[in-house]
Amino acid sequence: MPHSFNSTPSPQQGPLTAQPEPIKVMADGTIKQVNPFSGTEVWTVPGRGNRPLGITRPDPQPLTPSAHTSTCAFCSDNYLQTPPEKARVTIPSAQATATSSSKAAQTQPRITTHTPARDLFNSVADFRRVANLFEIVTFDYWKANYGFIPSPEITAWRNNYIDNPQGLEHVRKIVASKMSFSGLSVPEIEALTDEEIAELGWPFFAGGHDLIIGRRHFVDGATHDNQLASAGTLSVDEHRTLIRFTTEAITDLYGSNRYVPYVAAFQNWLKPAGASFDHLHKQLVAIDERGVQQSQEIAQLRHNPNMYNEWAVDYAGYHNLVIAENDHAVCFAGFGHRYPTLEIFSKSACGFPWEQSDEERDAMADLIHACHAAAGPDIPCNEEWHHTPIDLDITMPWRVMIKWRVSTLAGFEGGTKIYLNTLSPQGLRDRMVSAMYELRDQGHIARNIRIATECLLHRNSLRYNPFLGL
Image (cartoon, rainbow, N blue to C red; front, side, top):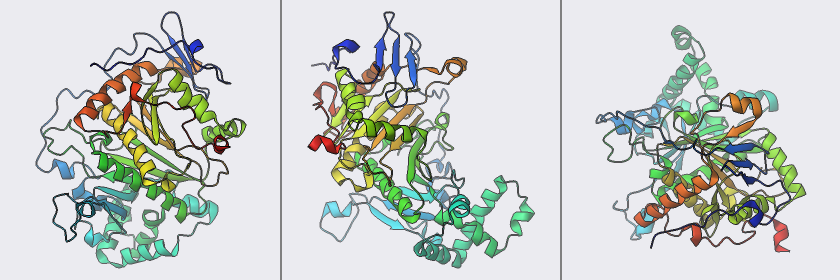
C-alpha cells in the first residue's frame, strides 16, 4: 500500500496560539511564515523552489589509492597536521578477535584521552577531538579577560606532551602552521625557542574551541571524489557514538573553564555552509555570553513556560508538519527560518544532553541521523545545537536545527528583512517523509522511528516544563 500524508489544513482549522499566526497561506499559494521565537518573516513564493537543491558535481574524478586517508588535514594519515589529541573513540569491528566471550563487549566504543604523539598512529580513530587551530573565542581571550588558569590535569598533560621530543616537534609544527597564516616569515618562525613554542601551544591543550572529526573523507569503497562521507552515511550505531562523544566533550569544556556559561555546538557540512574541508566534523565553542536570540527566548520562556510545546511541536502537529518521532524525540519541518530547516526536539525533562539517559540521547541521535540520511550528502547544511545554559534556573529542551544552505541572501532580503525561502515547510516535509520511508525499509536508519501518519503526536510531549507534572 502506498504511503500517504494528510493535506495541510488552513490556519483556521488548527487551535489558536497566543502568538501571531506563524503560517499564512495566500490565495495565490504564497506561504507567509513568522518564526514565533525570533520574529523572522519568511515567504515561500510558488515556483521558486522548482530546482535541484544539492551541489552538482558534473565531472567526478577517480580517487587515487591514498585518497581515503590523505585527502585533507582531517584524514587519518594526517594526524600530525592537527593539534594534540584531546580524546579519540574507536569502534572495534564486530568480527575482531577478543578475549571476552561477549560480542557486545567486543564492539563497545573505546574512548582514550591525551594520546601521546608517538602513539597517534597505533590505531585508526573513528572520531577524534582536537583543538581548532583558528579559535573563535581564543585561549588568550579567556586569560586576558577572566584570568583563566588551566587545571592541574590539563597542565600536566601539556607538560608531559612537550617533554617528549616527538610531542614537542608536533607542537612546533602546528605552531609554525598557525604563525605562517599570521604573517610571520619562515626565519622568524624557525627562530622560536622551545620555551616560546611551548607557550604558544597552550591553546591546543587548554583552549575552548574544539573539533570532533570523523574517520572517513569518502564513504567506504568510494571510487570517485563525489562520494563524500556525511553524517547521513554513518551507520546508526556510529552516529550514536558521535553524538555521545560530542556531548561528553561539551560537558568537559564546561568543567575545564568555570567562566563558561554556554558551549555552542554546530556542524557545517560542505563549503557553501561554511566548512573549511568537505570532511565530516563538528565544532564546539565555549563562549561567555548567551547571545541575543537565546536571551530573547529565555525572556519568552519565563512568560510562557510551555512555549516550546505550544509554538513549536504542537503547532507543527496541528499543521501536519511532523516528519518523524520516536519515544524520546520528535522532528518536524520548521517555519519562519531563512533556510529550509528541520527541527529535532528532545522530549526529555532534562535540558542538558550530557545528563540524559543513553536511551534519550540515542533517540535524538537517531532522528538527527535520519534527517541527514534523507537529505543526502550533496545538500550543504548547518547543524545547530541548542541546550539549557549551564547557569540557567529554568529548563530549555535540547533541540537541533538542520538548516539547508540552498539559497543566497540578496538585495530583497537586505532591504525588507523578509526572507525568501524557496522550499515551503510542507515541501520540506514531503521530501523527507518519502525519503525516510525508503531508508527505513532498507535498514539504513533506525527501525523504531515512526514516520508521518505513524506518529502519535501526543500534546505537550516535551517534558522539560515542570508545570505539566502538577
